Amino acid sequence: EKALSDPDAAKKAIRTLKKKWVSYLSKLVTMTRSKLDKVNRKKVVALITIEVHARDSIDKLGKAGCTQVTDFEWVSQLRFYWDQTANDCVVKQVLSVFSYGYEYQ
Image 1 (cartoon, rainbow, N blue to C red):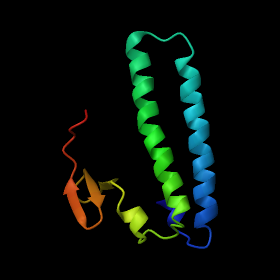
Image 2 (spheres, one colour):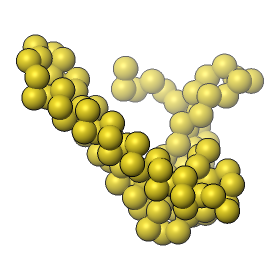
Image 3 (tube, rainbow, N blue to C red):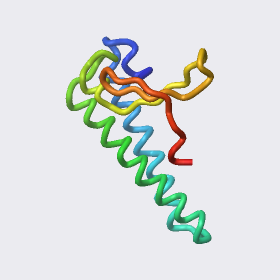
Image 4 (tube, rainbow, N blue to C red):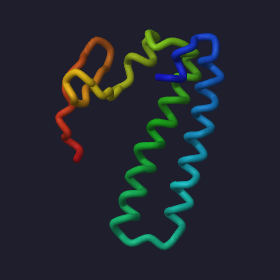
């Protein structure tokens, strides 16, 4: 979201963010080539799966020319925020807002 806070710099910020994500993914892949126990290997593989989706979402935002937080390509993404007032995590997508149920803990 921070990358879209300045519409004039958004395209460059998205490209920079994608480069950082690719670098992070590369580090995770390198970890899978090292000696990991079964549990940690599963954790890293799960992270890779999640982060590949994030990379693809960032790429989609860039290709769509997304430059503002009000662009449909951004608001259509499932986004998580910390609500200071409720002291809880909320989930937003398009016009929907609901409390996160901590389903994936």
